[in-house]
Image 1 (spheres, rainbow, N blue to C red):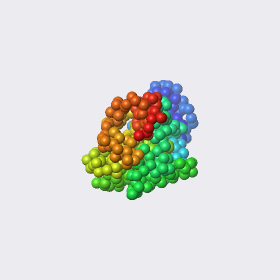
Image 2 (spheres, rainbow, N blue to C red):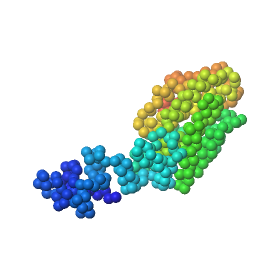
Image 3 (cartoon, rainbow, N blue to C red):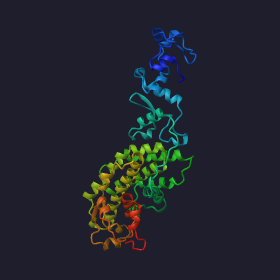
Image 4 (cartoon, rainbow, N blue to C red):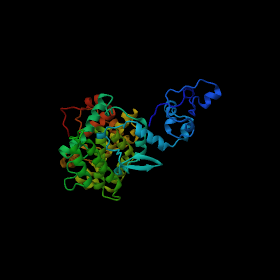
Length: 393
């Protein structure tokens, strides 16, 4: 369908609807203006006023933003026109979230959507927006605006690789899944291992598999499942969102952002349950489970906080992050001996209290403390506190 202008010059400049009369339109005849068309038209004069083709007003809509005539046109027709004439916003190899061979009706609009994306909130509207804006150009990676945020981002990006190589991360204790490994975390381990092998040939397949794993977790809530299994589900989701935000394209970031409320809600729910159900006095194993829940919740909020700073320049979740619980004895993470040597291993404090009451004496920061302090106070202050010669414990 051609999009070239069909209205006369006078109607186009005045932004009014033209009836395409020949040799002069009705408006120009009434106003006695010189009626001139930019292009020769194949439309017969008798059919000019009866046509309902969208292309007859597309120039006015695109130029003026929205014309009175636009409100009388079927939006479905407009979407079809844009789909047929505009280039696709993503390359074929990077469009795993949008499949052109399957469609679903959403509020009268036909939009491309994979069945595996049915759980992803707002997918239809996202697909519609992509059709309307056309090609978006090169997608810039999420980057820190200063040295401190660059360091924090570099740490968050490495956690999927670290889990694949060492079977542990800052929020996944090496003893946590030693006896039992639930299916969600097994699948996440495989996806993290594959993340380092992404290339142009397998990128679409990689993220399509990831989408299916996320949908399976979100579509099959275990209700009153034990904390251990719920933690495995949340940690798997966290690893997937890290790979989407920091290693994926724009379409993958959109999916991660659409699920933000769900993921943050799961983290808070798990924290609430752990406080009510766990008795950390039972021993080191119970402490590890509680600490993994606390650390996972903090990292979930930090990941989305970093993305918020990149997108909007502010951390929209800062007030919640400040109140998240942290252990007063993070060194218990390293061995059971340190756990038993602590006078109060079960003590907790908020992130806000941790940053405000940091000791002024030289101290060797553990990995979690270093990440939290640099994210809040900056890399310079953290470096001053971090004494490389001081004992780690």
